[in-house]
Image 1 (tube, rainbow, N blue to C red):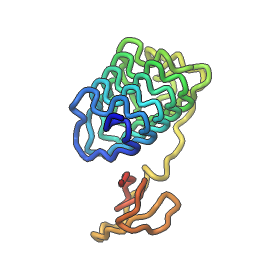
Image 2: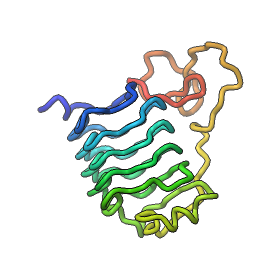
Image 3: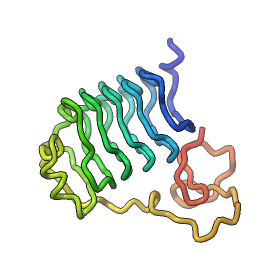
Length: 196
């Protein structure tokens, strides 16, 4: 068994995934959430992560590389923030299980050749900002989606702390306090983070 085949969760702390194929073929990886400092997903970074079912990219991500999620046949839900400008060639090739894409980007990202081709656009729901529905419905590759809806509010991403008292308190997604040793997605200082 290769070391990458045992990886189940990833907490990214870097501003870039600069190594092509950095997490490629991590067969057990099923959930990916990125920090707001991440700006780039490199070419083939998560290629063939067949157990990956859900990806949430923070608002800092500006580009998704070529083949970045190619072969992620189990990927069902993909969410990206307002900063994504480009999606590389065949970034989602063989992502045949995709049922929902959600974005807060008001301008449709420019897609490389066949970036969204293998997504079943007759079944996958696309959620975009209300003021951008017409733009996505006219944009290359995005216009092929049959179901385009107003973006659902994401209470977790829309949390803004009333004050920053320096507290390191963490909460699970049900709002219950958790300790520093908690593993999974937590809310800390009003931000959703992934700990392991």
